[in-house]
Length: 386
Ligand SMILES: *Cc1c(COP(=O)(O)O)cnc(C)c1O
Image (cartoon, rainbow, N blue to C red; front, side):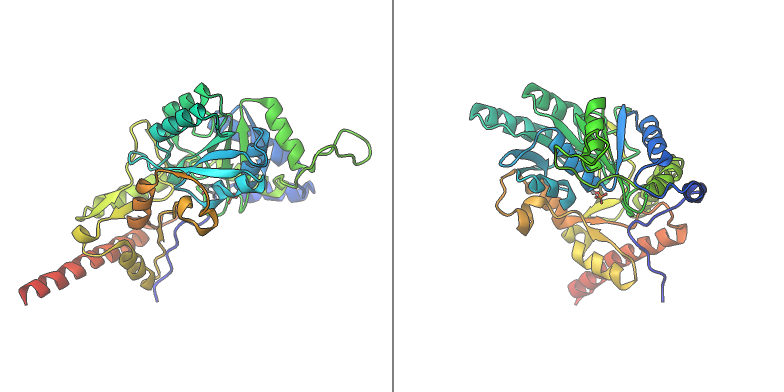
């Protein structure tokens, strides 16, 4: 029986345990402590963010971000459609409604022209959204400049979901640090992980202070427990922040390893009908996941056939995110465009992409995919010859 090859698994470095031990030795086993503060500072150094609040998850960070830019019951938020549900779920926590925006083919991320058109239209009818949520998918930044220009023109705050794109660049800077608020995730499958965790960043110190306040049950300054607002229990544990500090030290290595996976796949899988997710000229992608699309006619098998064939060999792959406008739970929501995201979902596959994959692992994935192509071609040829 072959060893299972998974999509993206945690990859610890040399220092995480030291930091965790330090938390134990000093008894900072709480959602507060020196690792939390230092992790925030070190995260700012790595990303160029001005201020950061370490939180219990990326989803918690999105929830707070939406609330901090003033999203309330009945509001609308424009949101990338090609993403994980966690991007949009917090919009509904606040009683607001997502309006989904299609991707472009250059980056697979929010199409800036569609966004601009939609905002122009909404301005004309006096129904502008309360915020725009752009996602930086699979380790690649969206085209931030035109998105930010459109948002600025209509004075709409931009929130960046950079959960999948820590370590990427857009024109030399970190996606997540351009909008009013950016968020990151340290879930177990992300490029670096604290097992679970998230970060909220902004140039606005007061806003980040408010995020910390809301994340610690909104306690007013008083000797007794006093509350004038509803808060949350969203702070990151000091133990997990220790893991995060260790992981930050290997971020560049993790990016290099994932980009190397991509290079190996791209070199070996130059098969008819296979196209890899493009890397847009405006930045450097981390290739958090190596994603490709399969044209069933040219390749000889469709995405599902490939996924199932690999599954039989204990190789985990996943379809590209199912667009949120196709999700049953968001069926009532408005969608602006959607055909590009639908096509990427229909034909797109994510390959095993962990930074800890071995060359043998990659070779197994490559020969499994090649086998599907050559086996089907053989069948077609023999049918033709018969
Ligand atoms: C992982 C992820 C999130 C959620 O982060 P968690 O830390 O798991 O809550 C949000 N958005 C995207 C695009 C993600 O991939």
